[in-house]
Image 1: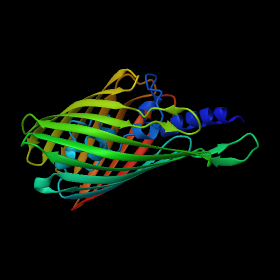
Image 2 (image 1 turned 90 degrees about the vertical axis):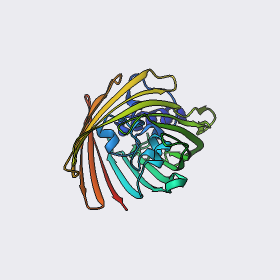
Image 3 (image 1 turned 180 degrees about the vertical axis):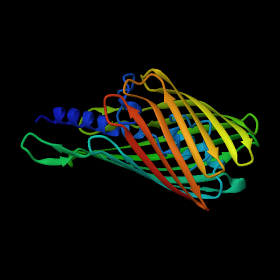
Image 4 (image 1 turned 120 degrees about the vertical axis):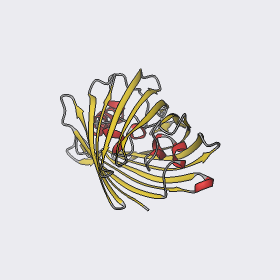
Length: 300
């Protein structure tokens, strides 16, 4: 098999395997580094990946680094995604609030693209990706926070061809009042990802969104969110989500993403007990099996 043909086949395999990424959309960009488009966290997936204006848990390290100022205390979370084509996807995040000095977070993302069979019958790992990221958020005023993060990205195809890249994110979070906030995030500003000769740009992404929290009673609340998402040369897409929290213990989530050929509706559940929280979400992928995502987190 020629090298270029192998790389194309592997890329297609990983596109199918990731399942819930925007790379599967008919309007998706043609950038490299598709793992960088995979949404971090499970709560956000249940809400249609509309999270840039909410940005209030450990996954804000990915969505909007300015939201690190909103994360209370210390949070640790681990996420596992069961994708298609034997693809596995894992995340580990740590965030800490520094009170008057803002907040910071560090995280690791790992993607295993499953086995890939070559023409000679032998099998190799289709793709192994690693992302290491760190971010910091700072409160400029009572209503405005800013943030930035850095990412190191390493990718290996068929156990042989390796590429690395560096990227950065910038974020803003504005609280219009105690219930309404607006967020802006520019993601993956960085170098090309190059395996052999020619390189591909990273998926430069702009997210603009809003989150609105409506308190129903002391122990009940409803959260609504909407994001506008533009990835490189892809079309502008709209993400919408909602979350209902009952008795500060159980959360029910629903989301929808427009403009995608293979995916649209998402849903999820969350359960809190003492310092622990378990989140589950799934995305309905048309004509393919649905994908399932789990996150276990602890708050101190």
